[in-house]
Length: 66
Image (cartoon, rainbow, N blue to C red; front, side):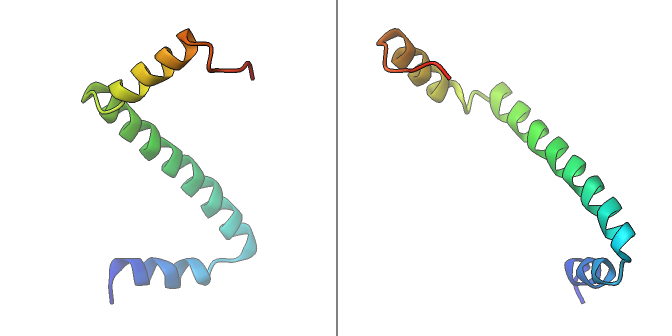
C-alpha cells in the first residue's frame, strides 16, 4: 500500500471535527507550498517574461482597473 493510500484511508476514518481540523491544516500547508514554489520561480526568473508582458500591456493601455 502506498503512503497516499494510507493517508486516504486514515483521513476517511477521521471524525467530522477531525476532518475540519485536517482541512484547515492542509489548506495552510498547501498555501505555504504554493507560496514557496512561486518564490522559487521568481528567483529563477521563470516569471520574468510574464511580468514584462504585463507591464507592456499596462503601458499600451490594454489593462482596465479592477
